Amino acid sequence: MTARASGSSWARSPTASGCRTPRHCSTRPGSATSSHRTPDAVAEYARGARARGLRVVICGAGLSAALPGAVAAQTDLPVIGVPLRSSLSVLDGLDALLAIAQMPPGVPVATVGVDNARNAAALALRILNV
Image 1 (spheres, rainbow, N blue to C red):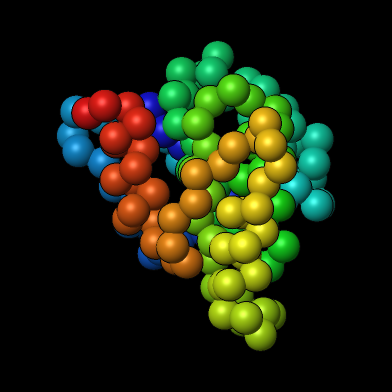
Image 2 (cartoon, one colour):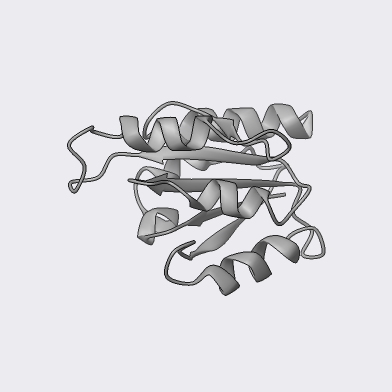
């Protein structure tokens, strides 16, 4: 069971639709949460993920891309970060990629390419050993 979460409406966007899984797997859509605007909601979501039956969490984030790290800090489940392009960024998603990839020791977040939700789904399946 995987869930998609995002600091914007990414969880319902065409990019996130790449996170399709085979019929014998299931996904649960996440909610649009922001580690900056709704940090308490992010922490609550992450802390309760296992109890809701989740086994992997996929987070899409752009700009400072803090969401995947904020989720990983609150759960022991695997977290996959999808760096997203933003019209507000002059770096075209590279800023988000670096922010997600450079997590401190003890707070791992797997990172895929910019806007590459399809690889996030493939990695989640490998983590789940499906």
